Amino acid sequence: MSKNYDHRQLADEMEIFFFNEQIGAGLPVWLPNGVAIRDSLEAFVKNLEHLAGYQRVSSPHVAKSDLYEISGHLRAFQKDMFPPMQWPEDQSHYYLKPMNCPHHHKVFASSLRSYRQLPLRIAEYGQVYRYENSGSLKGLSRVRGLCQNDAHIYVDPSEAKAEIKSVLDMHEKCYAALGLKGYRYRLSKHDPKRMMDFDGEQELWLKGEAILRECLIEKNLPFFEAEGEAAFYGPKVDVQMKMGSGDEESIASVQLDFNSAEKFDLNFIAKSGQNQRPWIIHRAPLGSHERFVALLLEYYNGQLPGWLSPVQAYLLPVSEDQIPFAKELEKKLLAKNIRVHVDLNQGSLSKRILFAHRLRPFAKIVLGPKEVSSGVFEIQLRDEKKQVSAERLIEELQPLISPVEVQ
Image 1 (cartoon, one colour):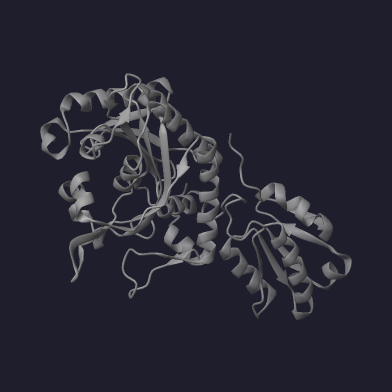
Image 2 (cartoon, helix red, strand yellow):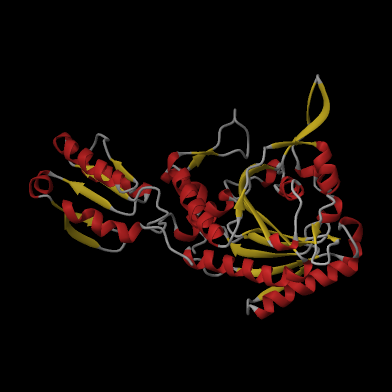
């Protein structure tokens, strides 16, 4: 990945997102091309989660302060939260949610749970809000509103190690499907000199860190260790990768939480018939849409794999005479769920081709009088050109842009 690739410039050229002063700093507005990437990533990982037995939920964007007092976020994370809201008729304070986990703990608590239901895997692409310092905001990689590929897995402590290994497998499958290389794992531990910043007893922390370390070793995943980088409720494994700027960012994490069940009084009925506290695994293989799309744009210099390309087929009618043919072709491609754009801009063909290049479509097709009359035209792909007939166009394109299948 070249250090010269900046997702902000790429996103501007490719019409992915924008910021607006009146909407607010760090609050991106996703354009249709950006939403196409988001939707493709989301569909991919939702299918993976479905096959792995995850159940999907949806939680509100705000909650009362009581929830975050119980979770510990108001103690440990308040400086990164938006200020509270209050209405005259309601004395309660409400906060924009900074994380999805407290809401998911309430999902677990909403029903009587048995050991037979565990591991219980609760997933959500959840929108969260964090008040990042204005000086640290940076395109999509540092924002104040983000949508996370979140899930929380409630396990019998004896099952935690096996489940963490399964979660690490899912991470590896995701990155292989996306063609990503060059990332590394970080075991983020507590700082024994600052135990007041971390919930629970040190003995549990050491046990949790040992479990994560064993999982990484047994999965043969290279990693390094970093003291003081843990979440306040438990140790974690972070996936570290360099962005186009050369800065290393955490793009995903797997966290082991042995404290929240106590705070939220979460129990399941064990085989013995007694109540037992679950341990909780927090995981997000694709992190947030915002940071992950920024990473992918820089990693591929905007030349995204066919299934992720916001424009999969770009049709360039040479003149107005070819527009009706282009529109008919557009209908056929749309009917096969191929993302297509017909260029209706004025100007010379060379300038219009240059503009098309900025959008980085997967395939460009120029439609002139000869192509329309013969029904045969040239597809210009990223690394090759093909002569195809109109009848075979879809047959040629579909295998190249179909979503990846991961078992």
